[in-house]
Length: 387
Image 1 (spheres, helix red, strand yellow):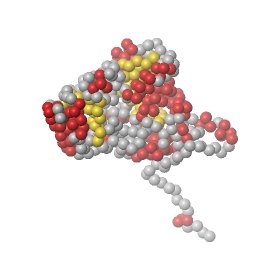
Image 2 (cartoon, helix red, strand yellow):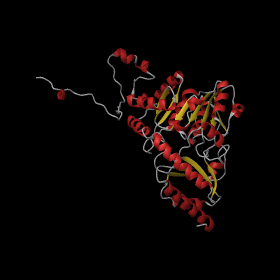
Image 3 (cartoon, one colour):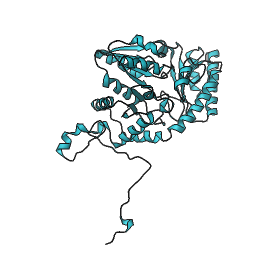
Image 4 (tube, helix red, strand yellow):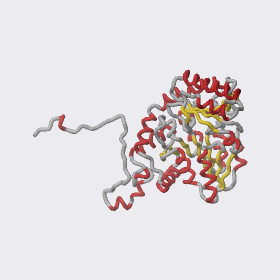
């Protein structure tokens, strides 16, 4: 029988990357199995270090970050912990910004400090003065710019210059800016952390983190750390992050524009005591932001006028366009509340007042502003009447 062209299988091509799931990786021979660890850090020896789906996501993120290597993990928090655990040992001194993600501070203070790691919290809005905090055994400086809730702006290039002179590693959580607005690796930071849960994924439906770097030895260490700690990332979530990356630039641009407009409007409202947003000229960190960053993202915080708790309840209860939730970076707007005791108890606290954090999504900007103005009216009324 003569085969026609229609009988011959044709190559399959798709714009969508394949999802390859695996726990067990199989081998062609016993010799290959015995040497399976030699396949790392890029190859495949067991599902915990990833499948081709994870490697494709890592390749794309590394390219976006301007880095040579990337390791994806199950969440942004796991990316932070994996980086610290890969390099910090008993007897080391670890410096952590007071504005870093709360779970990272909890981990180092309540766990690592009990393993003979000397943990020290330093002021968030710092630059070359970080040198005063260094010790002969300082191993790593953990940074975030701007701070998670109160938006302090450290001088990253100044900190990196000091760290390099003293042989200290640096790690930065860059989730707020994303590589579209700031590339830590280009400024000499050793490890760039992103909570891909947020901007990269973009739709509030996954948990993924990533660690990007240039040093190959660091990459090998982190791949081994990923394996030892069991930090496997779901291939399905990797696929969703890749899908999110396709729209990252347009989402980021639209959300940044809307956020700046809303933050500017709120700055002049009588019930708003202060807007914490480095993209505003009034912010203490604006000079550093303007010098180093090329975008402003979707996240900022506000401090309202002093008021009883019932007024904050009225503010949040009146919101219709904003959901109440702790995460951010997705297409839906969110509002979160950080009470006064939480601020007062924080080291180097910016304020002893409650903080309201807003993540601006892709809803109509006018509707979001209208919603916030209504919430502020409710806040004002409850402050006046006490009900």
